[in-house]
Structure formats: structure tokens, C-alpha cells
Image 1 (cartoon, rainbow, N blue to C red):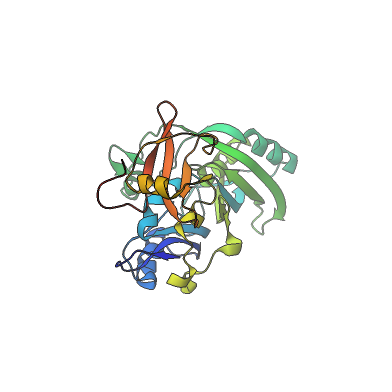
Image 2 (spheres, rainbow, N blue to C red):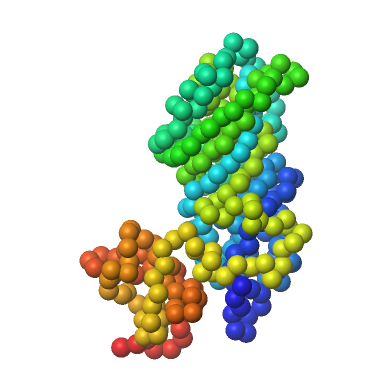
Amino acid sequence: MSRRKGADGPDGLVVVDKEPGWTSHDVVAKSRGLLGTRKVGHSGTLDPDATGVLLLGVGRATRLLKLLTALPKTYTCEIVLGVETSTLDASGEVTATHDMSGVAFVDVEAAALGLTGDILQVPPMVSAVKVDGKRLHQLAREGVVVEREARPVTVHRFVVEPTGRATDGLLVVRAEVDCSSGTYVRTLADDLGRALGGGAHLRDLRRTAIGSFAVAEARPLAEVSPEVVLTPAEALRDYPSVVVDADEALAVGHGKVLPRDDRYQGEGPWAVVDATGRLLAVYQAHRGDSVKPDVVVVPVEGPGPG
């Protein structure tokens, strides 16, 4: 955890294991009181019924949330074949039923494999995607359904396993999904049902990881406090880092464009840290052989070097 001189509250990251029944906004609002600062945000909405990893940026680290949002996600869930709902999950009203008693598990595995890789996915109406300036879930509450453009997403892994048949005779499968940011698992469940000639919906969704931040290190909301805040540098542990000397650190603090040398490997972005490991900024590739600041975490006041 780090603190800004003369400022209230910590800077950094909290890994929360969200409980069911809480919205992501609820978690943020509660965490503001627990952390003693209003500057708290999250890196990506998790449905109220869903559980699992929710990353909270605190203080200056809220400026890093866009980088955390871009990290891949891992989910576990159950998919109920034979029933479609208005929300594509168990919270919605049943809109259609299908006799899928003839579906073999080998067919489910094949359909899941067909939904793996680079695919196009239509965002569900119950989502935060904006259409003409209004979020889809707001339109859905008004009973309005609009056309949505399919978006490219990547499903790195879609593994299913049988659970047996539920008491109501429906086929239920467990699934684990590794996917890119922006992938909707409820839509994946719906697509799976359609690929099998019927329909399906999602239940018991749990996000088990965002990048390297897994449930094993996540804390229930009741345990959130300034003492559990990870440093801003730790928040960017999934990105390559570049260590700069004192002169470069001063230039970074002033948001200077820097020459790109062999420390900047890959395409970026890069977490720029000083000799103590403190995160100073995030840099990205710039024109020519240079890099420029995307986010300056520790700005320097006064005239810059040179």
C-alpha cells in the first residue's frame, strides 16, 4: 500500500471476492467507507447474482483501471440446457423451453469447441454496453429491445463437464471459460444452447480470476481495509516493467517522451518504476523509436528537466 503525502486514503488495488446479491457499485460504495476515501472504482462489472473476483482501484490507482479491465478473465458456471430466459441467466423470466433430452454430452463438448477461439458475439440486452448513449440494461428495464452489433471476442478455453440430470429432467453442465475482456459468458451459454438445436441459460456464475489476480488472494468485503491494499506497482504485475534511474524518473514525473531502448520489450504498455519499485507511470509506444506517458501516477511539480 502507498499513501500520497498530505492526502487522505491509500493508493493501490484491492482484490475482492464479491458475494451474491451485491452490485459492483454497491461494493465500491461500501469500500469507500472501509478505505477512508471516495476515490474508489472497479475494473469491470460483475452481475449481482455472480460471485468472485472484483478489482478495486483506490486513490491514484483508479487511473490504472482501464489496464486492469483489459486483462483476460476466467469464469466457472453451470449451463442449463432446454430453457431460455429473458436475461440469459437464472434471474430472468422463462421465454422458451426445448426438449433436449436427446442431446449427448459428446455433442455438448463439440459445440463448446465450436465456440472457442476468435468469435463474434452479440452483447446481451442486460449489459452495460451503450447504444445511442443509453446503456442496454436501462433499455431492457423499459422493455425495449434494440439491435446490437456483434463484437469480436476471444474464448481461449471453453471446457464442459457433465453434472447429471437435475430433478426437473433438464441437462445441466458445468463449464470453465478463459476469455478476453468484453466476453459475455451468459451469451456464450445461450449460443451453446442454440448450437445444440435448442436453448440454454446460465446460472451460478463465478469469476475466478482477472489476469493473475485469482480468488485465492481475494478477500470478502468485510475484510477490506487500508492494510490489504496492494501497491500500484503490484496492480500492474501482469504488464512488463521498466526500471529507470533518478534522472529518468524526474523526466517521467514531468510526462516527458523518452527514447525507446532495449528495456522496452514487446508492444507495451510498460509499467515504469524507480529503483525502489515504486510505480511512476505507464508508458506506451510512440512514433519512431520513442515512448510516451499514458498515465503518470507520480507527477512532479515545477519545471521539467532540460
